Length: 285
Ligand code: PMP
Image (cartoon, rainbow, N blue to C red; front, side, top):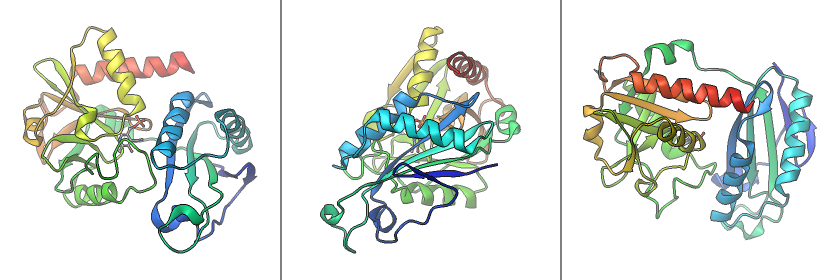
């Protein structure tokens, strides 16, 4: 159970960071979470591409190239020596003056955290989880675009707190126009009459790496997949619901707002996609 933290290329057991870093003061940062399998990074190229895209979207110039990240991540993973790791890559705006203007921050800070991973309980996959359709809205795309993965997650924190109060393990948010978007740290899929449906980018979601892979796997295996706009109520008609994400993988939802989804157990399409995704991970590792 080891944690190693790489700060701008130096590996530490613990790290104290300046309170004047705008990442801390304003959530002015970008990040990625990467998982490992057989102690190798899963889909690292895709995560690094998204990190650079997020940084570009907030005009944050990352002072190192992707090769530097690959090398430093490898060294930090070796130093931690865990069987499997949770890996978090953070690039903050850096230390600056105590006002919101980022122009005083001259040096972005790069933090690579490698920690022991805590997996979701097996029962979540066998029985499915409970999800609440919450009142907190996902940010609209012309505000802080949900497709930019920043350290500013308070909107999602509030959604998760609302779900907790309702006795659910996670929340699904609609956008300000009432259309389905995503979970707090995952993308949303649902099945109606054998068709796999998922909110489109237009609804204001993060382009999840797992989402992309699941769409591709589903299509390759003969499923009909549709990306589109559906009002929140549509979710109550679903025969199956599942969430996707780097850590969640393909997670079945068996209960929505206290009502069973379909049979109240993980559905057949969800289970076959969970298997296909696990096989893909194993093949890549
Ligand atoms: N949406 C949000 C808001 C997220 O934080 C995440 C987790 N990164 C996802 C979707 C899923 O993305 P990925 O499959 O790339 O982990």
